[in-house]
Length: 213
Image (cartoon, rainbow, N blue to C red; front, top):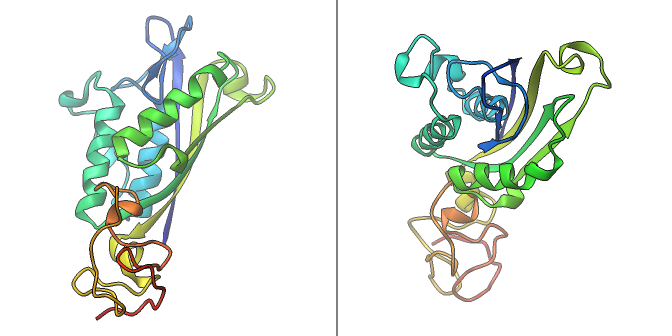
């Protein structure tokens, strides 16, 4: 298991869109940045990259590179997802907090969670987004900017697939020899997507011997 944290902040400015979690939110000010300045997604990307020891978003998406000018941060998040796949990591969960005095974000949070989960190919119940104010204190309280914090847990695809339950992607169950994916399991970055019973039970015969052939 690997834990990552992320933090990002962007200044609020006129003439910019306010995009958080891939949702464009009506507001008189927007976030200033090289991309769409989605501070929530940037914090999540830094958490994921940090947990996988892959550096940070500045390393992968420098603000000196014109190919990222105005780009949707959801596209950058999709690239981070690909990097995690290459490194054989799956996402257990993401917890993030947006710190903003205005606007009120509660009506948009569910869509933010859905957007993030869809891009990362994980369940919506693996993504939690919260919003808070700082009671008028600091730069966020003065509405000079918006900040976001994020934490995540990653698991090696091998650990998530068979270490806990005793199943092998090469062998099978000691009871019936089955090694197929659970019914309805989908590929992606979720633990269930590894294709093996996460709780140690066999998809073929239901036994819990937890021994691989």
